[in-house]
Image 1 (tube, rainbow, N blue to C red):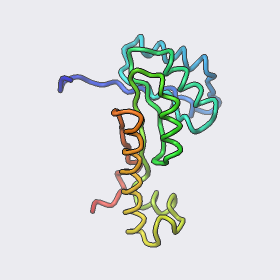
Image 2 (image 1 turned 60 degrees about the horizontal axis):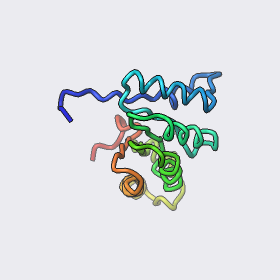
Image 3 (image 1 turned 90 degrees about the vertical axis):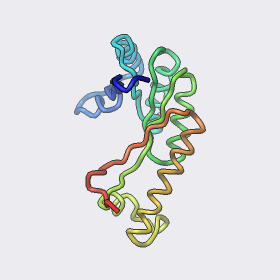
Amino acid sequence: MSADKIIVFDTTLRDGEQAAGTRLDMREKLEIAIQLAKLGVDVIEAGFPISSPQDFEAVNLIAKEVHGVTICGLTRAVKADIDSAGKALAPAKRRRIHTGLGISDIHIANKFRDDKYGRTLEDKRARALEMGVEAVKQALQYTDDVEFYCEDSGRADKA
C-alpha cells in the first residue's frame, strides 16, 4: 500500500444510529453499506454484533452481500464480543475486528471496579493492558486485520 493512500473508514452503520430517534433495520443497513461500497469507502464498520441479535444479523448480512470493501465489527476487549464479531463477519472476503477498551484512570476506576481486575489502580492498569493483548490475540483467530482502540487515551497515564 502506498504511503500516500488515504483509507476511508466509515462508521455510519454504528455511530449513525446513536442519534436520537434513529434505528435502521437490517435492509436499510444493507442498502447503506452497498452505497458506501459504491462510493469507494475502504472500510465499513457494520455494527457491534454482540449488542443485539439484530445487529449480529445485520453485520452478517452485510458480510455476505457487500463485496470489494473491508467489513468491520466493533467489540470491547471481551472474548464473547470478539467471538460474536468473528462469527458475524465470517462470510466477508475482507474482514476487520475493531476491539479495545478505556485506558484512562477514569475509565479504569469506573469500568474495572471489581477486585477481579486487581485491588490497586496499578494492578487494574496492568490487567487492562493484559486484556488488550488478549483481545488482539483472540481477534487474530478470526482475521489478520485487527484494529485496536484506546478509549479516552488523551487522559491516560503517560507512564
